[in-house]
Length: 489
Image (cartoon, rainbow, N blue to C red; front, side, top):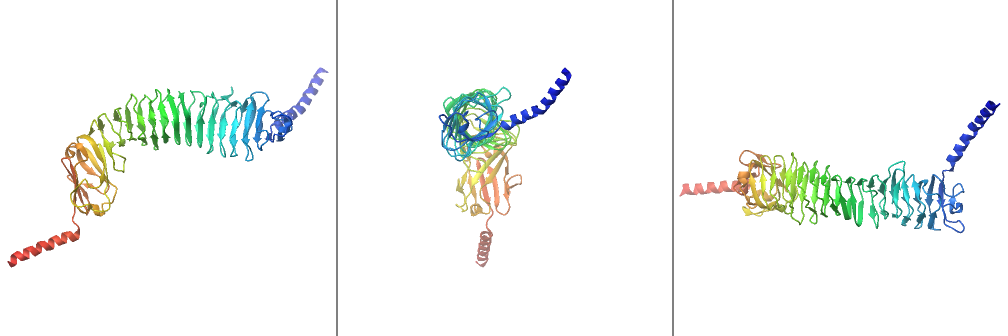
């Protein structure tokens, strides 16, 4: 009898349990706030939600806020209740959400131009996107993470997300668009978490924040404050940083992009410029830490108004040193590496207080903006060109000429010379080859077909022009005329 009754109960259970599960699944709903509930602005009041199952906010609902009623409202349901996401639609006024914490199982989106403020605590159960697509978002509640997963935050949308809570989530913070602004006690999660700026701006709000997690700049900007990094080296790939980069970490420039630093940086670790990219130190920027700088296949473009006191070394080939800022230590350019004043491809002037040595196979890239007209034969210092305040030395190096104007222009019609490219040093002792586009080295001079040739003698670079055909013909005819006169006489 017991056995039959048990079997019967199991049968009933097998019928009603799926119904219970289905009912439980159906309860997850999309609720739209209209704030029409009598007497309060609580989330548990079902009349405040204009559509939905009619029982107020509950587990796993998706919340949409719109309209202008009861803009300041309170989550009074159980703390930590999970919701699928929060959206402010395009009819929303300026809402302020307060009360108990929620576990965020989805994203937060502002589709309205008004500022939306969330002052209740948020618990992240994974990576969540805060999308300020049409208007700003401000989160004053602490952002933490659940026990079931690492919390991560992604800032998207072209507007501003402001964080003012002492946030504790441990996952990655990513700025991909717009502005992520810190205010008050605001943090980028736990100090151990990684931070990546791939687009938009990380605005530190004038604050100082200490990190030990990896900090990556792959696009966009970091500004207005100080990052103190006591972990692995700053990983900079593309973008700019006017914020002060400090701490015991170093800084490594990787990938082919350009990074510009314009802050008075105080980080004490080594600086490495790698992988073909360009690290530019702007006029207001510094990298005057206690460790040196190594260039491995990339370009260091130093333009700071503060003299560089760190030693520079090259590793491997394909590296470039350039700029207009003063460099105090002696510089040695090794085989397969390049130095140019100013920028590669643009004339400039740089002071090298300790002088520069060109080792065998190294390259001096000399930029000249010649102009389209001819200033005349043997005009001293003609054109705009690279100049170095400092002594040059070395042997077996390459003098590479980069003319910004075609050799077909009138500038090249007459002889030219340049004798102040370096403050001192014998160019003919240092450089064994002249190269450049359209220039063919024949062992003693760099020839430009049908136009002329470059030679080096002592401290002077000279251009010898081939006379124009009309000039040459005139000379021949004059010569013949003189000979005829002599014979007649």
